[in-house]
Image (cartoon, rainbow, N blue to C red; front, side, top):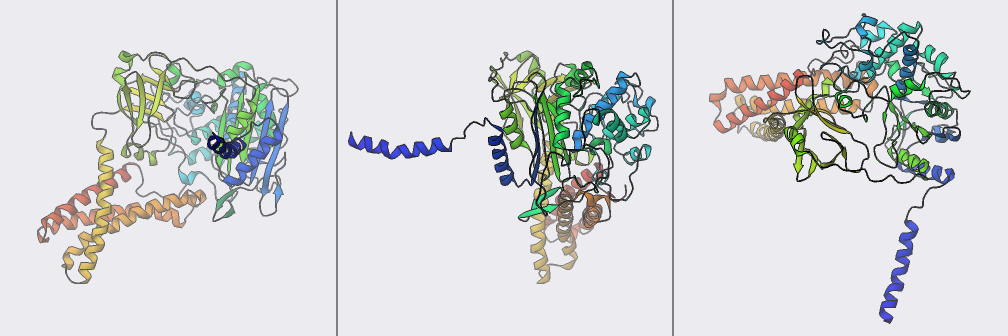
Length: 621
């Protein structure tokens, strides 16, 4: 007995320590800001805009951390942060004002309103691009090419001239009004429509009709703000320190040029909580327009009853937790932003950081704090699986709505997702990650495990093809040969790797004069081609930290032009030499191996050409 008491006594400090380490619930704003500052230090976030509001009061509207690291300048309630794509809801509010004035309809055809917009739509006769398609990213447009993001020139193209920059992106890759694929150029078109129908630049219209009536004193959608002393400096954390990023205007201003302060964002979030009314009670829009903004109109998922997708620049920020919040995220070099609200509960918040860091941890913390007094919702009911209804849909799917055509090849070469039935459960099984379990909310609609709202649907498109719509995007059911492209891709990578190693060995043999020189070049060219391919990947990766370099002649942009061409030329040259010298090889096994390798590399070159990577002159806007 004594030994037992001694053992329990020894365990007591352990249990006490665990209890002390257990996180305490956050019940006050100082506790919340302390927790946020710990996250900022851990995740290397220099400064933060933070706004929390109810329908009738401002809980917090200020800043944490530094707006300028070099000068140790603190963030204030009036520090401006570049909020990126949070600009898009402002554009929608402006257009909805024109709708209420009778100057526009969401179903108007863009070509009839603005025939000068260079839209290439093969389905124009039956499925024209409408205003609602532009606002819901369902027109089928490409997202902007990497050289069409930041403007490194001293002047800003405006109006129709700005739209012309994106003429290549304004091509409908599929029938408009079915698939959602995020497209910033679409919102440049939306901003142009706002300008054309209002008769003034979009930033002037928004300032006069939205920002100032709402009491947003600092907010501006101006493209160039480098002279504004209130603007926060953007950073990336690299090599153990904060590196400032250049403050550049963007070509697609209506898609992301807005800058706002915590004071501004408090008014903006409350605008949604007050059914589109100003602090004085003036209605800038009718409540019906707010419901229109939150409604998903044009996608296939909307037609089968799902409303968890992207509406008019409005989407559900979180599908887990006590209650969903709607809003929009934004990202621009140096800044990540978001705003979110729940009208039923009268709660909302806005965040922006100047360290290029995701806001996931801080957003979850803020949302949990706002919902701390709300009851945990009951577990959503799960319907019995309709096995007959889902039977035709079981099988493999491939993404059919890539955000950018240049990167669209990855969706086919890296596999897709399988819809599988396991007893009474339905699962989504990606090729390289863990499966998601689907809970039936209807015969062909489902929610993911742990979520309360349905976000997966099975349906058919206009052409009768079977479609899977999920948080991973829009996917078409693939045929029995779906595995062939990813298999050939990985085989090509394997052959490129092994032939490169073999090329180095053969080079050593040649230097020792143990290999005829006439056989060296066909054996060495796969290595050189692989180096060109690696160079392409290196150049593309380095642009991720310096997107502005794509819009001018730079090492990265030149390599992106030269490397794919060099890869293709080296592959073709090696194939020709191998065929011509086939009978001269001492080992036919080596000869056939080289032919197989060049065939695999040729497949990669064909894919690069198909998706527009050959002759890509990014410095030419």
